[in-house]
Image 1: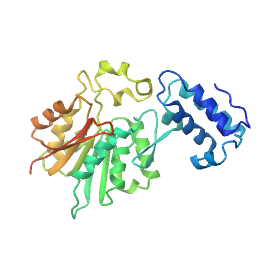
Image 2: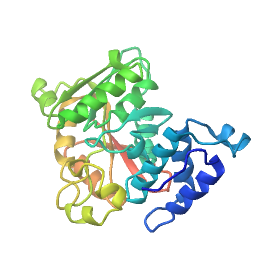
Image 3: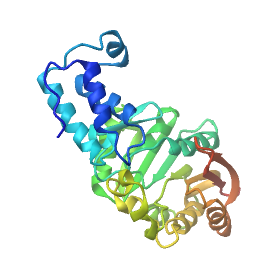
Image 4: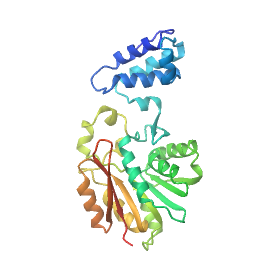
Length: 296
């Protein structure tokens, strides 16, 4: 563990932390060191700039040293801190949930465009909800909507419910343990539909590629939330078939997918009768999400 002596000035501690994180595999040691320092000491960027020589007390020094050691060993910053912000909202993380990433905001942006305003209270469904970040972000920007999140992992649902309570959205969100959309499809055997929007960021990494991912991903994200089967497309057919049954006519299914899966995912959706309705690129310019509607 890197030792930070109590009484060390902020600027000196920041330099030491940055040096300790300047190792292969850490993309931005300066940023990581700054985030961990501010969290460990409870200071913000303004306080750090105003008084860079302010001494660090013993508790903060020990905390920072432990965190820097964990980061140097490959653990992601936000896993260390136990939360990550997504669309301006703070989400608690656990070992059973994916870390929300900025690229997934493309899915939310596209979904919000598809959820057109109307006079009814809209019903959203998030398949594979994990931490609940997608569903709760949508609800935070759709005050007239109620959402349901499903996940096969009970522990992930515990985290999602806690996030909903922390964000003041628990009265507009429900979370159930389920294998994708199975219980909803069983509840609407006649294909009458009922949801105004379905979203999903399913596992889409081919099984053989997981070991080669960055260690921040392969070593800390739950593999069940990454592994999309041999071709990375395993969940998409069942999700699309269910959407044709449980979406109301004219409503949209919005899916995130891998950088090279655009055509394959579109083909799966259109093969069951869904109609392509638009796409969205992520912050890196990669086409990351597509929307499909159930015909009227």
